[in-house]
Length: 392
Ligand SMILES: [Zn+2]
Image (cartoon, rainbow, N blue to C red; front, top):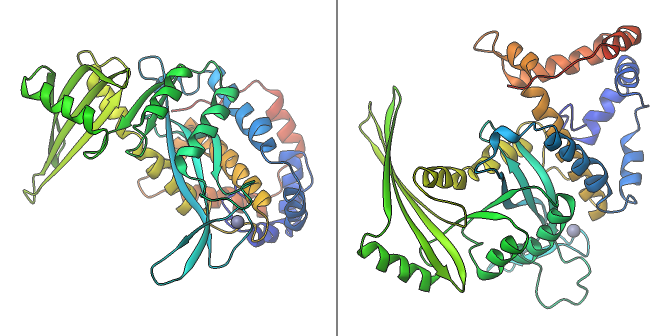
């Protein structure tokens, strides 16, 4: 269902009813197609975390071992963004673990949010390493609802357990710069790049203002031009700051972009705290990797929400456990699809002319499996030859 970006159980069941597709599925994947009602029954019982640890994290570990993502490392560390997103919302309680919010109008909504640790690369990979649901599970008679910061504590334990030796930079938004967050990262041997908002960590902000007054930091300027615009990035960096005994560096990037045609200008400012080295041009990389977090929105979530995966579709209307299992399947499918789409073979088809789209190529693949019988013998011959999938 997720590999073919079908977006609903019904759409997948329709494919399943096609004889050619069912036979092809068996030849290619080596198993019989289950009915989605059977999958639903199974997912309501399959213990939480099994798909994640036994399938997803094993797949990712083998890809990391084979250095598939190593070109995306910065200062020897993998960039891992932490971000929460809404998965489903309901007007009535969906299960007894739902989070809830009551609006001024008196209306209450019930929802499920998830916190993800995703490995990001500048080439566009966005791969789920660990998932933690923000939910009121096991909190019968709870006073306070679960929240992102609490979920991060559990996520960090899970991430360390699944990838104990992986060199990681945690990249997180303005909710995260707190002493407990810094300490979790340091205890796990992780680096971090975290967004600093104007109002937070006031004592540190005062120190930064003081240092800036004496101009103790160092500065860099980068100008980027293309045929439409000219962007100037001014970096300002301070080292050796101290917040509650934690050594930090501060990197500011003031960016202005001017569009040549309209002569309009856009100004943005990005501020990050880090425990990485910021010497010389490294401060530029720190800032850029801090901003790479937006990729989790663009490449990852957007794709999972809008490009056929239907992340927010209610795959299971009654069972929170089934919802979690579907969610892991979606993450696994997204990983496989990203590898397919990054392959030379796929890219060559995509670039054959300027109008071919990714969506069109997936449609062709599905059409082929629906209408044309894959010859099992040919498949065996293909699989017996040594092959390598080359990525861009
Ligand atoms: Zn629920």
